[in-house]
Length: 469
Image (cartoon, rainbow, N blue to C red; front, side, top):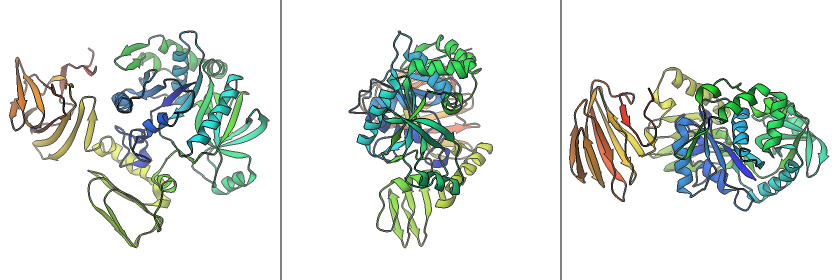
């Protein structure tokens, strides 16, 4: 059984923690692990082989680094050149898996789900695998514990093995309809997880969406390795129809089956759902970080950087990060997406980035800024190197706080250690490398007329970030 982990998506309803450059699947929201790491570690005890991951180009180093930290071996990280929804992404994975005349059973998982009861999940996987081996396209239907309007539903049909034939897929219902679904016992939440033989998925896709399959075949034929990653041609894949697996295949095929899943599952789609699934105190509160709650009930409070105190409130969500604070009523948590859309429309950085930004070589934290200056704390991992680059509009002053740095300015390379500094004038070609065994910490002071991140001309880069001309 080969897991296929879909690691795209932005998780905008979990802003300000989840942002475009660091969405929820890469955050530690439900355990000490990130949600991506939990997606794989919860498969321990099953017959799963090395998983394949699918993500976009911008998140590739996040995926690779989080797998490295947990020593998770993988079967490839497929990069989508452009988002085209789940059906084409899974088609790429299926085509990749069948290249050597193999035909594994694929377990398609989202990278951002919470499943608390792992033994129950494993049993559901075993049941689904038997049906998949028989040629069924299996989905996991979550046994509902309440009428929920945020999920689509699956109506069960006649029994087949340890599951059911799918009678009907239903869109997200109104509350009264959801209540009727739950009371009937015939409807299950649509989890968005699937299991099928790679060849069977491709057969059904050929039947119901041949254009999509043809584009994916041409794209996978261009497959090329790039470090830990597998790339396909942008121009080809960009012509692919945009559709979900539900619409493209599952709602049309007569081979759709469902295995019930009763494993304390949640897609963690909002702060409210995160509150619902977390352990609460005697007042129904969930608190994370440095918090003081007084006369407060049924609330979720998450403090990242500072002390957060909530007094005399009920049913609220308060989330604090280094650069933003969000306060919402639990019943209106879905409107957070509207705030994110406004941030995007106004081109504010809080839409995409946190104050601390992760890069393949480490990270930087923007500590302070003004009209003509910016101060960053930069961390470079041992053995890593920033690109050889130049700036047209800014000079930089680097002060090493801990560790040591090999600094190249034009044709001169020097070792800079703790409490030493170096100046890089405007227009100088320069590079920074950590030759040591411990993280390099330095303070960077930028000064100039324009300090945007797009004022970087890269000449060489070990992470493949030099634009091709």
